Length: 500
Image 1 (tube, rainbow, N blue to C red):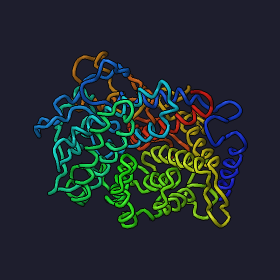
Image 2: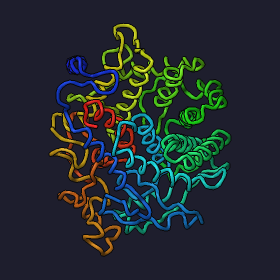
Image 3: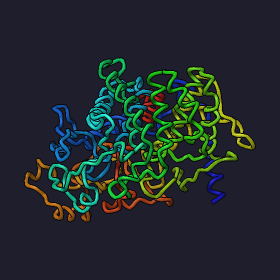
Image 4: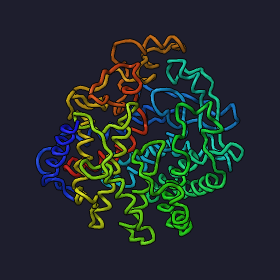
């Protein structure tokens, strides 16, 4: 294993030879992939995850309206939003995180997206509109639609679903600071996306973000406590709610520049885990993202009061760079960052995004990262090289020659763990497909009849193996939170190679 690590470190060092410029364009030689095509497809995927009444502009044409009575059982309108992955439940916690990251992708790299910017904005708005509905009543957030256990007992199209669309909420009696603060983060981040193009909508989003964050902070507790039987084991908040409070405050500070949120971060940052050494960034744990986001205030805005977050962000970076004294990374033999066997690709895309974003901040401030010991100085170029290697692996530069994005490249997953994609479309089969009737498709060997273009699946195992089996949800299921940070990474790479 040590020999493999050394070989991989060497490969990363070779990847840093001149050609990875600090700003804008600057790569020499051909790009390994068509990043622009991958960008377009990564955004299109969100249309396949839509719930509600689909608009005339819907491009994923095999989908139809669904969930049109969502919220009715609680006398609220919860029509719309996204299915998080391959089932038909609307889980508010990962949906909000997906929107935060998709919005962050647009905020950081939207200026490079050109024609795809409008599609990205539409994807953010679809999610933000739903979050506005879910937070319409003060001191209440509707955090889930659908009984997950009963939903998972069926394999049916969202257009056919007849499982209970039970509504779950957090309120002062059943707090959920984690899901509430994440929702506030998503609304605040989305407000930045529309600040220039739709100021009135942006103001509405930001006002709601402030109110939701105040609720999250005042009524503290994890939603996994009061709603354990309903949200676990699917999306338990294993990391607690402190990371979301810091993350939410960071986004509100960025969106408002208000001294009150700066004061909140200064007063509560350490208690909320700003200095913790965890480096797994995803729908559950936001510490790493918060550290990078807040560090921008010091590096770019020159806000000296937050200087310690440069050190916090640097510590995260050093834990991610192979060969540093505090390196915590594990890679497959083919070079893929490996965190967990279940949906590992989410950590690949989120980590790549953070590396590229922090490289942007460092380059602006003309600074580097010192990892001490034998780790030496880590430059923005090196961070970009590491991130690019991960994206290239995802797109097909791997031992299997397999793209893990559906519809991209010659070889990609054909049997995706996704109900709507795996069953005949309504156009092809107008008749209803019942709850248990659909399981024949789950275990069938044929390719999915509907191509879920742009979907990125969980990915290969630690040995770079990918069986492409529909019933293997750990490796074959796509998710919105896998794609959301990838959108920003692909926009940067497409631009830097002159494809945009």
